[in-house]
Image (cartoon, rainbow, N blue to C red; front, side, top):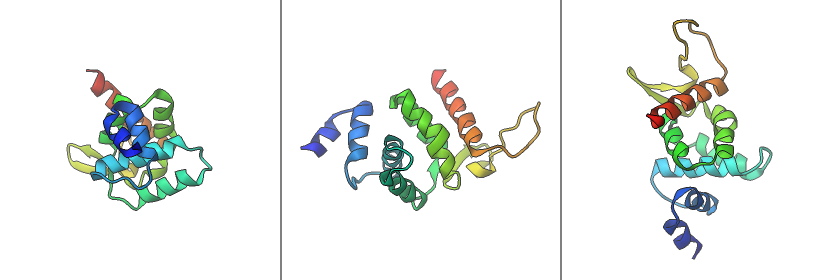
Length: 140
């Protein structure tokens, strides 16, 4: 019954139900979103968060802009904050960003501009930069 309910409910409530179901299956991108939400739902020291993050570290690369775009549409602010400032920075080796030159690992992302030359930035700032880019793109 719970599985049928999770499939029939749309939006954040449906995503939350699917994230909490044990070992649910689906396309890779959908599974990554479920694991990210599952990690965001638990406190930092919870074993379930650690399990979700470990599973994501062993999964294929994650398209950062796609994940952020999907999450911006349905996740509440509190979960988005947790995702952008805590969860995604801990996964920078698995995150990729589509650029004009092709896919780039988040850890190698250059977020400089005309004012500030290239410098190494903390992964949380890189994730926040990508979040703002997605938010602006979705707003237009």
